[in-house]
Length: 142
Image (cartoon, rainbow, N blue to C red):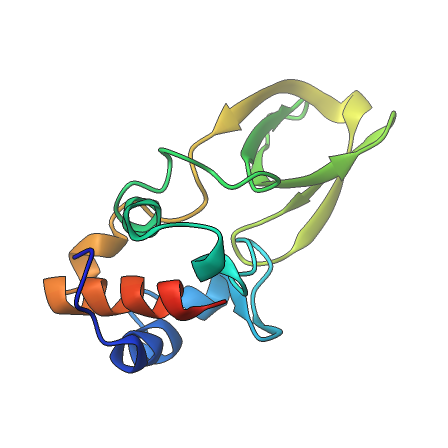
């Protein structure tokens, strides 16, 4: 899955295959979600192996600034999201649905790191050819 893909076919999978919904979380060219990192320029920064592992083992190396946080509130409610910063009083999270939350730190009982927000089973929803093509498409984003 590291060489020989079709970047145009990979782009179609990335943009259109509902089972993986890449644009739900990632942006390319200013379109898409904010839960995952924008992918413009990725191909000039990361090699094919990194790109493949990011899809097949998303928790192995989480992009800086996109670590998942799990907070248990004093009222018993649990919130999970990608940390978008914090100050003395507030933790900012973005949920998997793209909803931005501000959580008062005084309301937090416990806080822990969570797994990647990217589903771990994405590779199972792609054929080997589709996976190879998506890697080639991501490599083309310069």
